[in-house]
Amino acid sequence: MSQEIKPMGFKVQQKIIALVATYNIYDLATDQQIFKAKRKMFSWTPTIIIKDMAENEVAKIVSNFFFGNNWKIYAPNGTLIGEVKFPLIRFCGIKFDVMMAGNRYTASDIFGYSFSAVDVNGNLGFKLDRKIFAIRDTYKVETYPPLEPVFALAAALAIDSKYFQGK
Image (cartoon, rainbow, N blue to C red):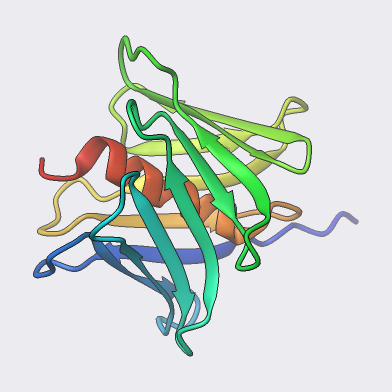
């Protein structure tokens, strides 16, 4: 009898009133806020910091300066742990890759609202759904082992920052 792998679920919700993009991140199982993320106000490159509720940095996501198509994910000690890459030219829909420890997860959606990121073997890494009818940007994120949840959260924040800020 095979055991079904249960995902770790999150709700990422952008604050309505804030000077810079600010997000509250909740555990879907308990509806408790477990992380918060905030875009740095004065930075040459778009930078988003994810912190736990004790204000400890969990990860930093930094975009390249000019095109915003490559978001690097750093551990709190400054070590590069992964990347979220968007194609330089977008023909239709949104496509991106998440890389971590030699593994590559690819996802795309023609409308940019629902993604399933799979590796080269077809294993599901995470699902990402953006609420269509909402006052503020809200994402449901489900992460499947062995992918670390921070990579799926980084993808949600990078997509929101690149494609949906100010729209």
